[in-house]
Picture 1 (cartoon, rainbow, N blue to C red):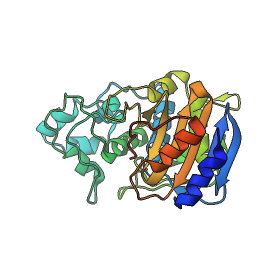
Picture 2 (tube, rainbow, N blue to C red):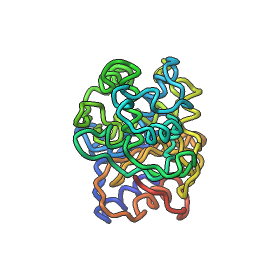
Picture 3 (tube, rainbow, N blue to C red):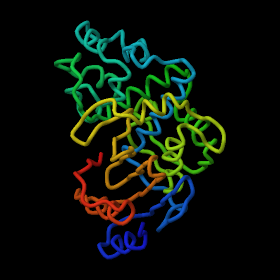
Length: 296
């Protein structure tokens, strides 16, 4: 590993990288930039935090991932659906949303009621598993968890994920109807973002305490749906011989258990090229150019 060469690439190319951390076998060995002072946007990496919350509710025996999402949404919203739409969404399980395997759904919800918008989306072949990346999927899963728990999902995440991990500074957003927005909008420091990756790296354990079952951790981080990027789990991307937590503009936490590595970066990079990733792979992983991995 040549971390200094990676930092040199960042600085010489003027990539707008806020901070980077590298953990080897669970120990922080290298860091660069602003890793603990400022909160930075996670964008779609928020979805992985939501996935961990799903796992905790799953471990409590409160959700069946094979059940239709309609079983867990507000009853008054479901009652308003047309017979055709209800029949369509009865075929869409929680797992289908977690794996982004529902075709035709738009990327994001609009209007004053995002739930109504989502449930009115026309899906031509609801029984077909087609990879289609959409913020609506994670939004509906977040609404479902709120209904299941009978309490605010944001507060549940604070108590069950952030507090045990020692994350005391954070931001997250809500939809117009007040539900936690699980698709995007969360802010953490680089150091605290690393804790999310480390929890999954450690198969749900944190400092000797189990926060998430190994069963769910394995399901969430394994390939559940094939796509052109190599595969997708439960709001988690396949990456090389491990997996990654991805957000647009370069938000990444690469988790490579077989290599004993967790590599975290938060950035503000509009360029959609793979130059930063390729530099990381060259200097930290010792890899030559790889196939493109999509940032969401």
